[in-house]
Structures are given as C-alpha cells and as structure tokens.
Image 1 (tube, helix red, strand yellow):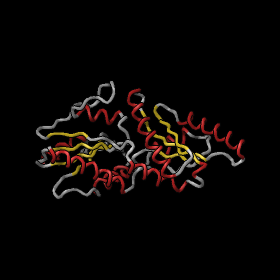
Image 2 (cartoon, one colour):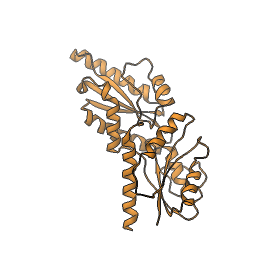
Image 3 (spheres, rainbow, N blue to C red):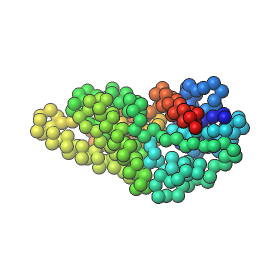
Image 4 (cartoon, rainbow, N blue to C red):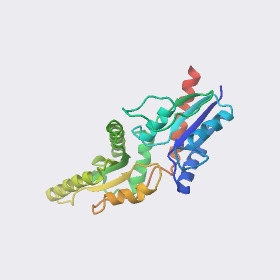
Length: 267
C-alpha cells in the first residue's frame, strides 16, 4: 500500500492566490515518502485535478485521499468534485464535471473546512484587531453561498455553527451570517443597523458595532470588491482578511490526512 494525497482548491488567475495555497500545502508535515499534490479545479493549466491524479498514480500511489480545500460542503464545486470521483450528490443536482480517470488506485473523498474549530480560531484571529468592546459587538460572517436550495442549507448550517464558535471565542454579543449567493448581505446589514439604532436609543451607548468577517480561502475579488460593494453605505468594521495565509490551514490538512491514514490502516 502506498498512500498519497490530492489537495484540491478552486484556482485563480492571480499568481499570489495560487502561491498562498501552494505554501500551505508545501508546509504540511507528512509521513516520509508520502506524496501530497496540490491541484486546482480550473484555470491553473497543467495542475488541474486530472493532472494531480495522473501524477500520484505515476508515483505508484495505490490509495488516494482527495481533500477539497474549500470552505463549505455546500459548495457546488465540492459537490461536482465528489460526483466526478463517483460519490453521490450532496443535493438533488447533477454534477457538472466529467468523471475523472483513476486507473487502479482506490479513492477516498474527504470533507472541506465547514465549521472546524481550527478555522474558528483563524476567523477570530482575523477580526480580533477590529474588536474594541466585544460585549457590544456583532460578528457578521459573510461567505459565497449557493443558489441551489439544498446546498444553500448546507452552507447556512455550517456558517451558523462556525459563527457561534467565533462568537464564543471573542465574547461577542451575537453572531449573524450572510451569503453573497443568494445576496443576503445588505438585507442582514439593514436588520443589524435597525437593531443597533434601537439599542443606542434605549441605552445611550451608541448601539452595537458590526465586525464583518469574510469566509474565503484567500483574499481576492470577493473579499476586496464584492463584499465592500454589497455593504456600501453601511457602518461596519472590516479588514478583508481571509483564511490564508495562516499555518493553521496546514495543520488542518495534516489532521485530515492523519485521520484518513488511521482509518485505512485499521481496515
């Protein structure tokens, strides 16, 4: 038996985005001789998913662990990848990818980040510098989301759990979530603004501050442009920091690999 790991992320035309993913994967501590390959769903030519499968099999790998480096099991991309490796659909939709060719190796498809406690630590670390009086602050977690109703429920369930983890870590008064797809960010912020105005009128303390935390793997178009655009005109605190760069991502990958190795060795 020779195990190997295929870490899959979305891909980007931004070389810095790709480099951040590669750095996280390269920093993963692994058993001697076990290959870990970083591949991409699209855009990064020569390093797509099939390229990664082929590289692992050419290296003699007999057991491949596919680890989707995405933030939610509700992602259509995660569902597409799983189906293309022969897994059942996460919701009632047909995947959009052609099946991958795996000649001899057995394949196990892992789960993405979701509400992992390690990720909550990263999100809290990102917003901590924005916090002044957490007992009067609301955390608003903003993520991509999905138009697919079934997958959107998965997004919201994971986000709600993650937001509560971060709220508890920071001692924030409350935590809310909003997706960009469907577009809920402005609607949620309007509700928070009305609530804040009411609290301020009653208590005289100026109401609650809103700290916006983006739930994205790396900084880019969504964190730099889309979120600020959707929230234009509202009063909130935001630094746009994403999950990468952060060594906890490498530690998360290591833990997933370790659990998988324990499982296959026990069979």
